[in-house]
Length: 361
Image 1 (cartoon, rainbow, N blue to C red):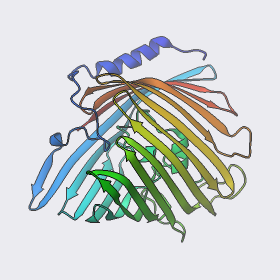
Image 2 (cartoon, rainbow, N blue to C red):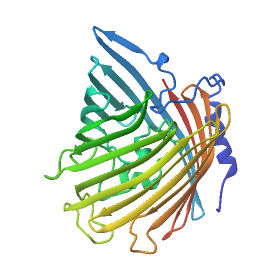
Image 3 (cartoon, helix red, strand yellow):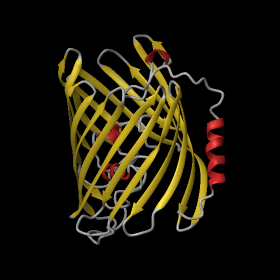
Image 4 (cartoon, one colour):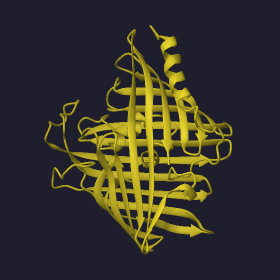
């Protein structure tokens, strides 16, 4: 790296850390799989026989970046999410999620539970593809989504043909549930749905539908094996970088993934491999993430991410490296500070130091 201003980095990191000084430093609990640490602290309103729970979180960050001898820095509010979970009766529920910072409606869906093994969900929500894409940002140890997952799941603007701001969500109808349960613990759950294929807050843009599914097997507690797929047709928002189709044309957009995760008191491990096909352009990606619990509230993060956007070429891949720390200051309040190196084959690398402040309730 050239031209790194370590004084500026120190000032940026210090400013974020000092902003947390008013919080207690005792950590009560680590977060659960849905991003909520302690359900007893979730505000709940009783309206007749219905119960409504209100939740939310905000994430802001400071970033210093270096590339080709030049440096830049920025501070931003990444997202501020408000959520409402309404349990209308023992069968019917409704979920709402809105991002105030970016003025976007993320999720709204109704769900009817015939049984724990058979539920039907209708509305806009996350597509069941890859383990990482289904995690809330509060529980992804990386400050940003892995590039391989973001591209394959259509989450960011990593795939200009699919479009920007799709955020891995879409309008659809889905069957989901815990098919096999033993001693109160699910051994196998599934999700299978039909979606528009246009993405979050987008109107249908062709007469095709995407079929998306996932199956998770949990042979042991805290251990999960997963497989998922997307079989669909997308309307190109930009021409193919590899000359396969033009903007406005329909193209096949298929995805497959396999993955596993394991959690224990020492370390959380998660890894997935993904394959894609965009109108004949085959892609491949994978990541490996480790979250080492050093002592109460403090975790060491190590992550490797690989994405090859066209496996028929020798220079279409990127390798990303992440290392850092996260500290759970109080319940759902967390500070993450990470070094990121993005190393594409066909251009010079980018180095970043990112610190994120998270508060949730």
